[in-house]
Image (spheres, rainbow, N blue to C red):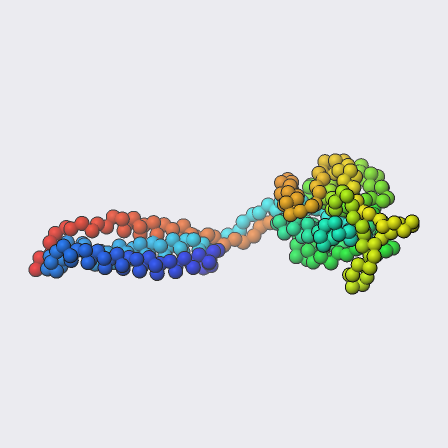
Length: 336
């Protein structure tokens, strides 16, 4: 035998209080009776009244409560096969790792906030397959499609800004690689989540729209940053800011959130645009993902323990019924 909710046994501690209160009431009752009648009359009181019946009724209630706690603990024994439908979607996160994601208009910076969003989304999933593609001027698979969420989160946390030779921002490269990832898809529902500040410097993404629409892939875009923009810090190996990125004229470059592009990308595939600004916006995005219809991925047969909570529950109810039927009324005087 095993229990699905063994923590329920902690309620048994309350029985000590119940027994103490019952004992106190019995003593108080006896004291009141002896106040109004002699000890001889009390001893000759009805044979179904007094200490014996009080003890018996209290024992019944105590046993009933024990069985109710046992029912709450969820006893289970025996096993049976159960068929389960595994429903879910396959989603690929496209994470911008260009230098503009180092901007600190969101604390500690855009990239870290974006990674926190990915982790928060995965923490709310159950049977969805997830993959992570990091991109800047080039794209690469950081984590292939998996349902191992802990491994996925570790790979997400390990994501860093792309090296200098891969800098730039090209949505098209990320979309093409995501399409390759979906080629062996098991799901009718496929989703891309593009997380970026929206500054696509190559502007080749529209060339993949026909393929995305053909495959019925939804694209949700998430804008990271503020519209007013922020400078891009230059950091040394220790992560210390040593300066700011400048253009050829020596002016500090400001990276701005390009919402128009992200709204257009999402609308082309029937997706939706979200701006990532605070915890509330994260919750809104997660709730929206939860409402996306899931398709059947596979069927699974598993061995499940049979729940037997109704047995102690029925016994507890019977004990309470017996206790309620018992009467304390005087039947006859006890003869010497």
